[in-house]
Image 1 (tube, rainbow, N blue to C red):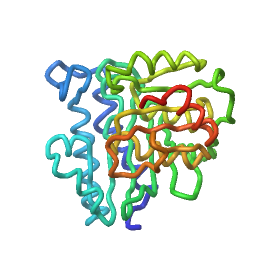
Image 2 (cartoon, rainbow, N blue to C red):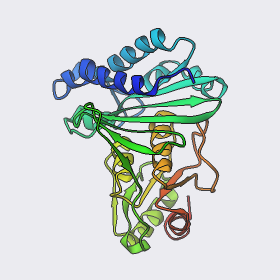
Image 3 (spheres, one colour):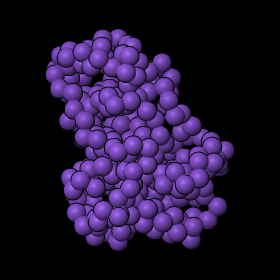
Length: 273
């Protein structure tokens, strides 16, 4: 690999301190814009942080393909390059932009490294807590702090369906089946949604959740978290049971403590998806 994962983690922190945190709860109306609808936002902080990361990577990792959420929004032709690249870095400059714009301190910066079509590293940085959850394929998942402390993370032990606590993103479930799927969720103990995948993945990786469900897949939202949760020992697959890969944009994603839990959730709660 040509990417120094620790240096990439430090870069996400630098971008947050330079471009994101100074703008938190200080955005003017002209600094927040809608993309596809009123809940899909982009701010000046998103764009500035992505420019910061992209410019630095052009110096430190030349030749690596950069796939940023805002870069793809400006030029959709960039996205197919992810599947073709020898090595690519995928960046979400602010995951949880809606929360960030609303002044809610639940947002983060995410990056993943894709090598020959496979996610091999994932990083989720929390600017408010100033720490990372990160993983390299085959090396486990870790909570790391700037002082060098590192704590290995492990998925929660499996529990019965009625005791499961987790997160489900329901806004992209097709309307004809949404009510029935959400009715099935009554079988679970708790169904939450932070509107911020990075913190949902972090909570799962820390052992506080038993499942995660997402219907829409974009690489900057899920590559890092999917790898990290797999490295905690969780079972991660699309709704049809196939492995999740960087080029997948649909087919859903279900994360569970183990395979038996995944099968139970798929059968009892999410069978219609």
